[in-house]
Image 1 (cartoon, rainbow, N blue to C red):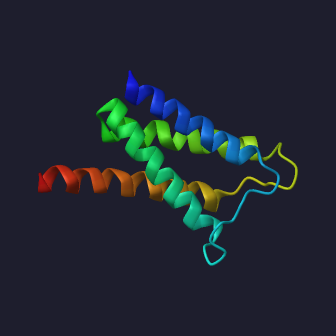
Image 2 (cartoon, rainbow, N blue to C red; image 1 turned 30 degrees about the horizontal axis):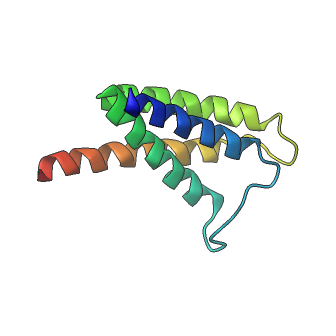
Image 3 (tube, rainbow, N blue to C red; image 1 turned 90 degrees about the vertical axis):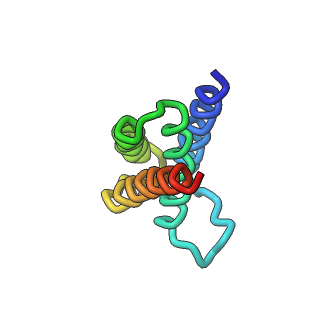
Length: 106
């Protein structure tokens, strides 16, 4: 139950960031694609730990990314981008690889 609440909170946080007309850029040398990768890595880890399945984590995470991009079409000053979605999927995949490596090391 605790993992599910963390996952839902993380999803809400991503949705909040998507709803901002001018999202923050705390590290100006990063492009928005780096933020997409990092944020969706976190989401991918939360999904995997909650669902206990890399395939489900990738599927649900990608679906969430698609709806997130669609949502941005309706936010002033924001646009939907296939490249952002690709960065989201890269982050989700990296999360699954990191978890596999972690389990392999243990």
